[in-house]
Image 1 (tube, rainbow, N blue to C red):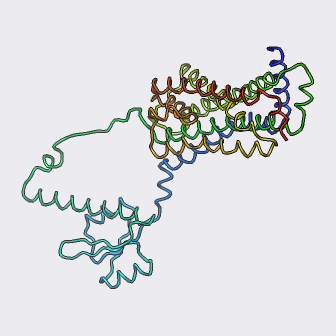
Image 2 (image 1 turned 90 degrees about the horizontal axis):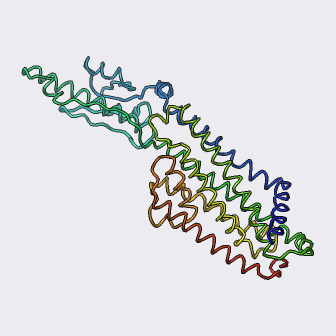
Image 3 (image 1 turned 180 degrees about the vertical axis):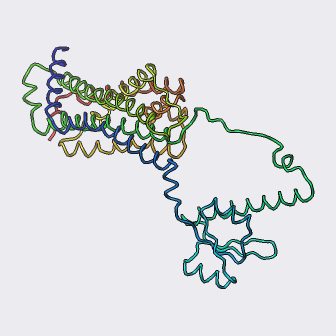
Length: 388
């Protein structure tokens, strides 16, 4: 029996390696990971770069006013991206605003500044921040001027306490996002490998009729299925190993090359790498069996592909959950794919939960055993291999 399973395994692996589409999915799909990592990092590192903001802020935001600026106000405005233009009255200000000559206008009346404009637009939201900064700074100046006039101690009023900010390693939204989407790609690539190899080795051979020839040899149907299952699992494990190598190398490279990840936690060591490999392999074993089970009733290659395609879409669910700020919990640890993806990303940011890890491993083993039992019952009769 072992000899027949091994013969089937070798036959299927040779077929998978000869099939260009399966080989491309198995070996080239993981290459999306470093491409995405470095593209994502390059874009956001540029956005965080000081020169980027200097270039984007060269143009001034025009704001109309109905009063003359004092010397202190002019000094304040120099440090802001504002150009304050004086108009004679409110009517001229309204006309200039309606003609889009100015982005905002300010009416000063009886020691009150009223700001008019749309602060919900892209430029408006930025300009409104500058305007409030200008008025707050001028208000502080007037307050200090008054305190000085009455002989108050300015330092005692404004500097009753001292504080400073010291950066330490911690959560970094960019790094968390990078890891989340990166492992989503990793899980997806394993799933795609399972889908394409299953489609060809199961439904493809059924459609081509090559299984009938294979059964002329002294081999049982369950030996054929066992050999095919091991071949599909082996393909997924190869993809898993390639995934983890690319993830670790890409993350390490991005972490040291781009400033956007300063002070981020990246928990990469021998222990986490080994554990990540075990998680990916457990997922590979599970998804291989699930793919065979879902495609078991398919009569043609296209039918099997159609029934398995939704499985790949499920792999992006954890990414949306992470984006929504939902963390792994006890209930989610019982859900395969979701729990595997979450565990991988939590592992690399040093936030893994041993309980959720144990539950995921136990449930994955249980689900895989159940799937294999169902598959063995479905393929217990050779008729299932020759459905037309």
